Amino acid sequence: MSSLETAVAGLEDKSLLLLDDDAPLRNRLGRALESRGFHATLVESVADALAAVRARAPAFAVLDMRLEDGSGLKVVEALREARPDARVIMLTGYGNIATAVAAVKAGAVDYLSKPADADDVVKALLAQGGSTPAPPENPMSADRVRWEHIQRVYELCNHNVSETARRLNMHRRTLQRILAKRAPR
Image (cartoon, rainbow, N blue to C red; front, side, top):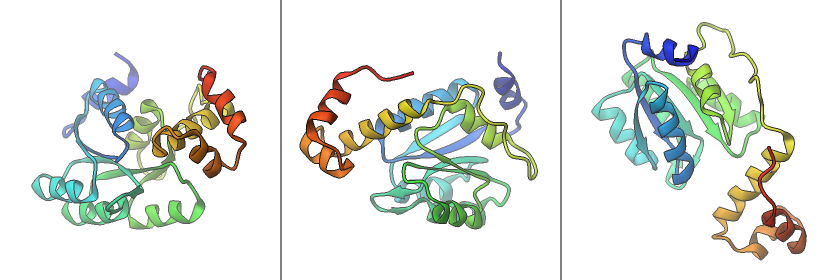
């Protein structure tokens, strides 16, 4: 059992709400958090998340910032009202300083950019006081982060290479070469 799993096992309430409209990411991260000891409820919209908070406010939450039906900040506010001691982490694929400040002001304890490693999420959830979690021991390389971003935009464009290339401001043939390669480490 890892030190993170031991820390989670010692928690009194292991309930966790995971809100993300990206189904593969939501399912993968949900399984990873459950394997570390959390009792995760997975939802894909702000409306579903608000219903879950009203039904039973969780001790922990990992929320996406931008969703089709609104902002994850609404859920942070609802969770703060229902359970002030809840620890909330915001995730986003569109990280910038303004949204990070808004998330922290709303009550989030940390702000991570996608794709986030499950261990980094757990460390952020368990960080106490004003301390910030230690930097990851094995962070993703810049090439891997770039590749993940390209894959996400490609998915959002329904696997349309031309549209993805236009949105990424890159030549279509360059994008095709990148997509043909394996993911960098």
